[in-house]
Every structure is written in structure tokens, then in C-alpha cells.
Image (cartoon, rainbow, N blue to C red; front, side, top):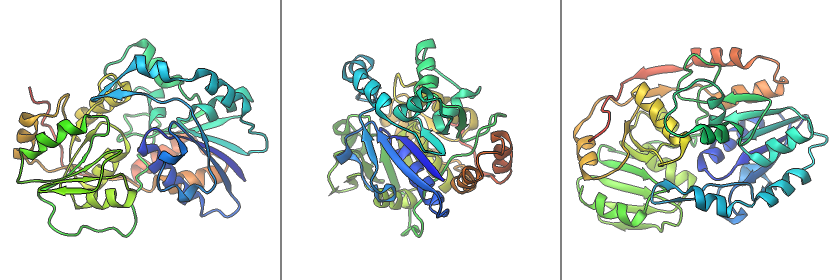
Length: 356
């Protein structure tokens, strides 16, 4: 069985999900997977060993500044001619299945060649009526048509009475907490101004902040610890932490929910997916949502200690790999019902709301 698997490489969550799927598909020796990633230069990827000799394309990516989407800059840097050429040049002849994790070159090449394409990813949950916030008709249309597929397999933190699956949680096996975590805070705010964050966190000396972002150097400065991106190092600090401060992306919050961490999420302004995620988190009571992370918000959050939600999601990657190997014959609705029955809803609910 030959599979062509395209992955949107702009977000590390897509890469985490792809690693989990690569590991699950490796259990089937007669399955060959060829990988394509787009959205960043080849040398900007890390921990890519599971994907062998993967292909890279420019694709499309979004530009941000200080925690806000920059639509004009995004449009200025979008090479639509290159995208069009890449779509036309990608030959999918001879593959038994094409899969896209919100990757536009693969999805649109499959559509152009009349080949069915399965979409596995969080964005495909928005094909169904799930919580939404913000955006306009144009942004919602782009969200749903960015990487069009034949069979959408959406992932979300809750089913919302729709045929969507639980998250694919890719935690490094064998890692365990190294000790007391009560004062340890993991920070991952890659879209924010990092120079503005450090003075803010310096005002809370009782807490140890482990701050990850692209381009960070390994440095310990009192209770502030900056770290470069590293899958194993990041997940070890996630396990060791009591608190998580992040944007409203999907994968990290899924991991934090699985581990029972207290979560503060700041959606990227102008990014409809993150605004929708914030709406879902508020509705479910899974996280504190802040439009701005400042001293008042942090002080209030640290002082309030409700029981953090802990959600026991099943092994979705293994279930999907088996579903793929069996020819995708079972309906997505049936697979969804099975996996949500296996989900442990756990304990806890965060109803803090927003700080004025």
C-alpha cells in the first residue's frame, strides 16, 4: 500500500501529529508512506527522522507581528505562482491513498488529478458546526477551502455532537516528571514579542518560567529560563510544569489537557482558527482565555487554583492507522463514536472567564 501524506509545516502541532501518524503507520510493514511538508524552509524543520527523505514545497504561510495576524504582509509574501506550479508538478500516480494534514499542494494536486484525498487534522473539524468566533465570510471560506479534501477527518477536544475525532496526542514515551512542579510554568507564545514577555514574567519571582520560541537561546537568568525549540526538551518541561501559557493552537493544548495542566491561552488576533479554539475552550471550561497577557491577568490566574481538567484521550493515531490500512471503509461517524466512548472525560473544569 502506497500513501502520499502532505503536512502543513507552519505549525509545530502539525508536525507532532505527523510524527504520531508515522509511528502508527510503521506498524504495517507493507505500507509505504512518502511525506511532503510545506510552509517553511527545509532547514527550519527539526526532529524529522521519522519522515526519511521527505519532500519540501514553499506552500502558503501566515505572517504575524506581536501576536496579531498580518493579512497584508501574508498576501505580499504569498507566491501564488509558485504554489500553482507546485500543484501542477506534483504527480500522485501510483498511490493507493492521498492524505493531507491541511497541506494545500497535496490536497489541490489530488483534486486536480481526480484522486480521493483524506484530510486528517484539526482544521477539518470546521467542516462541521463547532464553536466559532470572529472572522468574516472570507476568512471562514479560506479556512474551509485552504486544503480541500474528499473525506474530512476533523479532530477536536470535544465531539460537539458531530462526526469528529478526539485529538492525536503525541507525547514522548518514557518521560516522567522530575519532581515538584507547583511553581513551574511552561510558556510557548511564538507569535508574541519575546522581548516584552521577559520583563512581565520577571515580576513573578515565585514561579520558574520555561520559555520556548523560535530563535531562543538556552539561557538561565534567575527564575527565567529561555530554551530553543526541541521536541524532547519541550515535552519534558511540559510534563514537569504545573501551568501552561500559550497561544490558542490545537496540539499543545491537547497535550496539556491529557496531562492535567492549568492552561492560559491567548488567541492570535485576527486568526479565525485560534479565535474559534478560544471559544471552544471557554464553552468547555478547559482553559482561561485572555486577549492580552499582562500582570493583572497572570496575578489573578496564579491566585485562582481550580482543579485543572484532565482528559484521557485514546490512541487516535493507532485507530486511524488501522482505519487507513483497512481501506477507510468504516464510516468516520462510526470511528468517532468508538473513540469518544474510549475517552475518559476526567475531572475538573476551569470557569475563570476573562480578566477585564
